[in-house]
Length: 93
Image (cartoon, rainbow, N blue to C red; front, top):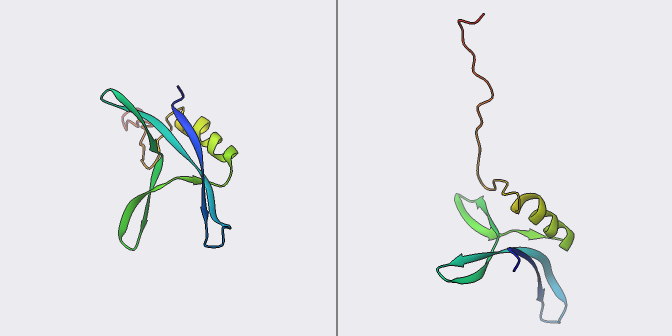
């Protein structure tokens, strides 16, 4: 079974017309002995408050690319990373 999937969301207004449409990704998670699908989310902040929201894409190609380029290689998201790049010793002039 796949670890990630892409879903399509559509909201129809009172006239039956599509008012909002996007793609989003989910990850298959195991909790105890059962599997379930969890939305991939990111943090947005505004007006002094932060909250998690579903990460949305306009096309299925963008969603698939996100899975292949970010989720599969486990690139950090909503995090920072520090890497030591050099050590300078004042005695070695």
